[in-house]
Image (tube, rainbow, N blue to C red):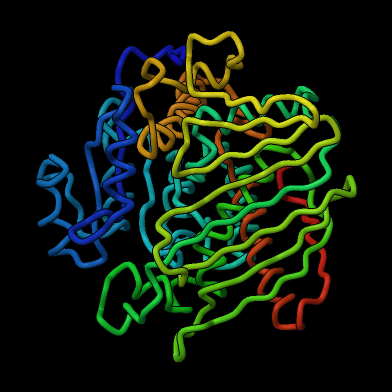
Length: 398
């Protein structure tokens, strides 16, 4: 799974967010360096300048590159010699800040890896997509579930025609951690995710429903046509949805369903997806990511396991594995696979090549627009009692 690198060094990473009390920033920092392809050298780790600098030792960031704000960071890093400045920045902050941070670094010519959803609203996503095209930077969105080897195996099988014509995609992401009003207890993750000023127009559907939708798009390559959605807030007083379900009509005539919940007792991160084709069907569960079930009527069910030495593994799936079969690979490794795919383009750009990410393995800015369009139209449909609305968008991945 190596990168054809003209650079005889590690890529230099900057991190925005991830300070004390954060979750996803540490995941980014761990995944980015997992394969010894990058090193974290700078960061603005919190919106609070004091906390930002106090968090730096946790990441071994030297004091002189522990910035009090992302604005200070982009200004200072841009002034450094090419041999010292960061090659890319990772954005691990609440949704409402993604656009302004990404814009600042993109305009300064830095490559960007951003947590999802890409922006606060669709208009920001569209502007960011045009900016990425104009500047030529590499932009990757960490829909990390696309990095699992057997998700990539499923994608290769679908695209090779092994399932025939795709008729249906069923996706579900069920959690239970917001069954009670944790936001009233000042729990950091709950506070911003349930706040429309920071999360955006959707709560649960924006947080995890987008993962489910993106996974279906990644595996099948189907283009969306229309959507009908119903969102619900079950916890009284909560401002954003904590449950929702949507039906998606795809342009080839297939049907998709997306269900997301954060109020289901005992559920942790139960993301699963099923794909029905005319020749066969696939099923994958995130909590058991090293198994992929393939079914054909009248035949024994086939269980694909994550085995880089097995002849049934596709090249993409095999190259996404780090360990022999039977040794579980999981969340961090999948996250790291998204980083590795983006690194190939970052290295190419550093070598003077023009990068076209239209067909990238990693989720790109077009996928970010797709996700924001999905959120926007889901909310609008729900507000119109489940009306069918268009999901077509000129800037989405084709």
